[in-house]
Amino acid sequence: MSNLRQVLGMPIAACRLLCLVLLPVAASAQTRLDPVAVVGTREPQALSRSSADIVVIDAETIRDTTADSVEDLLRRAAGIQLIRNGGPGQTSGYLVRGMSTNGTLVLVDGIRLGSATLGQAEFEALSLAQIDRIEVLRGPASSLYGADGVGGVIRIFTRRGDGSPRVTGNLVIGGYRSRHGDLGVSGSKGAVDYAAALGRDSSRGVSATRPGAQFGVFNPDADGYVRNFGNLRLGYTPAAGHRIGVSVLETHLNSQYDSADLDAEFNPDPSADFRTRLTTRVAAVDYRGAISAAWTTSLQLTNSVDDSKSGGQKISRFKTERDQATWQNALSFGADQQLVLAYEYLRERATGDVFADVLRRHNSAFVVGWSGRFAAFGVQADLRRDANSAYGDNTTGRLGLSYEVVPGLKLRALAGSSFRAPTFNDTSFPFFGIATIRPERGRSVEVGANWESGTTSAALTVYRNRVKDLIGFDPDPNGTDCPPGYFGCAANTSRARLQGASLSIGRRWGDLEVRGTADLLDAVDADTGVRLARRAAHQETLSADYAVGAWSLGGSLLDVGSRPDGVVLGGYALLDLRAALRFLPRWRLEAKLLNALDHRVEPLRDYQGLGRQAWIGLRFDGQGL
Image (cartoon, rainbow, N blue to C red; front, side, top):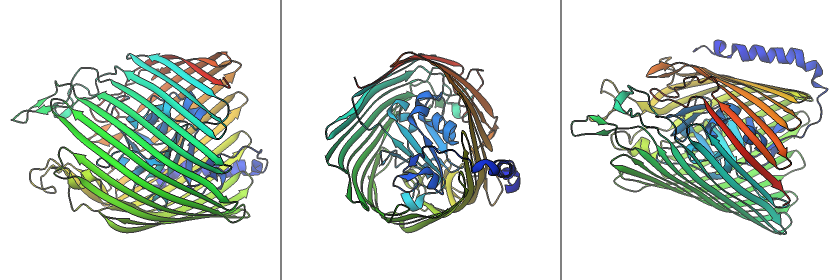
């Protein structure tokens, strides 16, 4: 569907229906606790005041999800499309509003996560047990976060200790010889707060590829994984309103996958035990203090390491190291006006067996953000100036407006510019990288509406993003675009058009809560009209949760449309079911049935996901022990 009216017709009609039917009762909206999000302005802000499209995934949602991984949770709760080379533990990608994986910034406790050579965060390195909360900003945010925030920003928060000691634990077994276990402790005593967690995930899995996979990579052995993880947060509050903190998160992933070694005549041999051994580590020292009632300052020094060793008979190693310093100030002018001023310095260093030299670059950035409210109107404006050693100076900006029509009904609009630099692989990887590849530049606009009344809520966003020089892969079948000897190369798509709509509706009837989402996407090369690879034209979810007494029951349905990937991959649907019984005040028995209908899943061409899988587990959550 290349016509905007065709793509957006259903959500626009739904919005009209919402406005006509629900507007008369919107004034009766009940008072509810307003969630707070950081991702929209870099400082805590009531979600109802944001003009951006933001999704908050809280701790309860993470605990009760039927998702098998962080990336699967994101596509179910935040409408993000998932690309994965097989089942859980395999290399994964994610598309926010159709933007490529390396166009989305991922932060863990404010620290950049991922590989500078690939230009993306490896979600397969993270366990759901490490995460307390996720905030997702859908849409360009380069004006706040820099060159990576073209498609959106995903901020992940680990648990911070507070109050009396709390001990948590979870033991789970499942199909495909899957196992999970984690143990955590958190709390505070006097001026010190603490939170720590350790755990392990593993699964035997299935063959990542199907028989007859192209390039001769199929191997019938099971491709499983083992992931060990741990994280620690400590804080010291020397005086009220001032906190000094230290945080460390580390994971070790050992994941099998399918590939092939080539002999002297370039014949593929897939028989080797191909593995990825990935170490991910992020660490930070930070300070946040209230200098006065109107001025809060934050300072953070971070270091992150992404160290990957992969291969069969021959092992290749790629390592990224990042150091970043951030100084941020929030100035309040009354209850409804805030000015954010920030300075960031980022230094990146990448090494790899295939690179002749160490790859380096650094970036300095100044950020100015202002948000204000004037009666029923809200205004948000951001401006960022980046000076990069590799791609020069760039300025991006964003302006958002919102209007509260009546209590509970808000209209919003947002427009901005974006920028993304090529990754180290795009410019320097042998027989792939092109040193002259151009950065991406984009212009986006979106309009939306949020409605809430009592136990009913709905949100609609319609967006259009035009990207010039979109970076992707050119297979070069005619051997005319890439240098001689290349089997395809990094390339710019002259103009890409990404447009679509996201609709979500939720309703609670007593102990029953039902939620539904629909995401429509028209992602094409604007010059040829050809759909961009691996983007589904639609993705929908429907979930229901019912709690009565000691029981909690739930189910979710995920429907993914067809995607072009050399061939057209058929759509698929997944039905997941769950049940939990609290048999003691601090103990829960939990069970899940994933892919209950045992549908075939082909997440990428020639790759396969898991079939039906049953899980059973025991969870402990004790406060004040």
